[in-house]
Length: 150
Image (cartoon, rainbow, N blue to C red; front, side):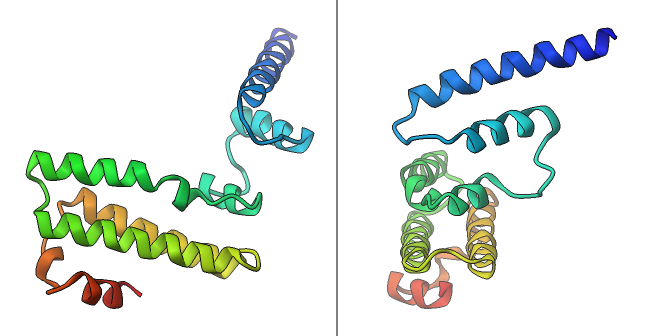
């Protein structure tokens, strides 16, 4: 009985928190979105969808929205000396190309295959940044890097 009471208290608290959080956002939220947030918070994402996948399914543009954050990470890596200036330039260019691809895909709705493609490209790009982009500056120009990325 105490575990049921605890689950009820946790559900109520999460519902109130989700309601308060959704009231602070600019975009309108549906009851289904709030319920999904509560269930996801309680039990994890049982559907196996990433936050980006969920945003794309709602018509969002998570790569475009995260571009300044990625650029900030590149700048920090450049200041720390973990990536070269030319690698940083190419990383930013490749991320811009990824946002452009997201825009093209979003024109008629992003399907499962396109989501998988965007996820794979994003993962590869972030792993390259996290690893210090070894050999990433070997491309002579940004244009050649963009061709190699696509």
